[in-house]
Length: 265
Ligand code: ADE
Image (tube, rainbow, N blue to C red; front, side, top):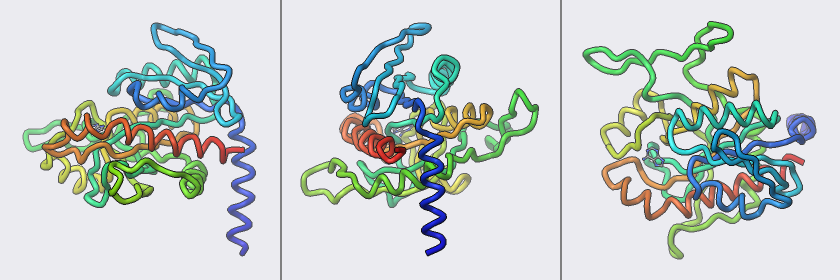
């Protein structure tokens, strides 16, 4: 009972402090399309060629942007959105390749831990993990950046009230879980790489932007949350599966993000 009360108080406190402008990022048009189509009083501001859409989503003030694919693009747009719009939180929505064999197309992963899989020290044997460094404090960053724990809890709650799209009419209802995401500048289409990500990072999914947003938010002391839905299994079938399933996966991620925003009241 005490734990439930504590959770409720934490929820209220967080909801109050998050009730300012929320930044939402997605890498590709498909990943922001659904949210963009539901934006009320939408206005567009262009900065350095990137389009930022402000408006209201589920009654909350948001700013929405498509970053483009990969680490450099995600980095530019995350920085611009912080500088220009001073959001209180940043949420990334999009698709990912599954690394955990229990995850299927359409399932959602709430990214609790984020790391790069392509940052480190390249030796004759392998790429050895070496952490990034915070340029302000000169300290080494942690191996894993952690999504805001209250936002992760809110996302878990928000997932209970949503209806996700099925991959086919007779496929099971997509599931939502919490886990680890590894980010790199590569579209992964290799079961050998997947095995390595599982072994070295205990990863559940891989994508190309999440850890960038996580690192920037960590260094700027800004709460963030990374939501991904599975489009493929990052294996040899990934290029074809990605094309087939990216839209339904992108929409599932956006459906959860909408519900999270509603729960931030
Ligand atoms: N996003 C979706 N699928 C992916 C994959 N297989 N590799 C990297 N990013 C992805």
